[in-house]
Length: 145
Picture 1 (cartoon, rainbow, N blue to C red):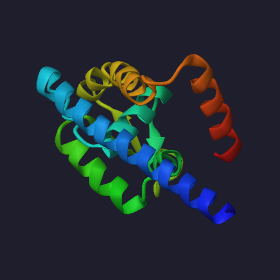
Picture 2: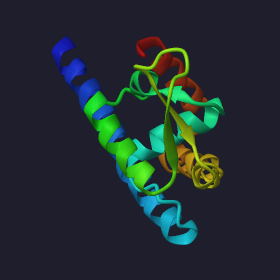
Picture 3: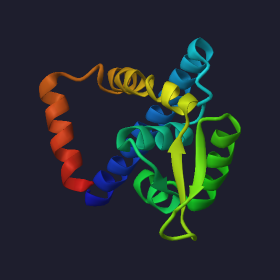
């Protein structure tokens, strides 16, 4: 019985992750079409969100750790974001081995839409839950994550 519950939990979390990724891709595509954001993948969204929330430059290693994205994906994603003019890289003045990522003006413009996209995403994922169900889910998730 316990194995069944564990399997169902993993299945449910996988479905939630998949639903989140699918909804986010759709919202990004729509926002890019309307506002020409240049952000069209969940990875780019995660990096832009993190940079926007900090407000100053962040080392690549820190972005990888905080977004839970593999370093190889981060580098490739940052290359694409730099090509679109959303970010720029600078060498850390105190440690020449570190590369600092900062939002450009275009990146800051795109970041203004992040909060709206996040709110839409939450509405899609949580829309069918009552306030009590949301509170319970949040409590349970905080215990396992």
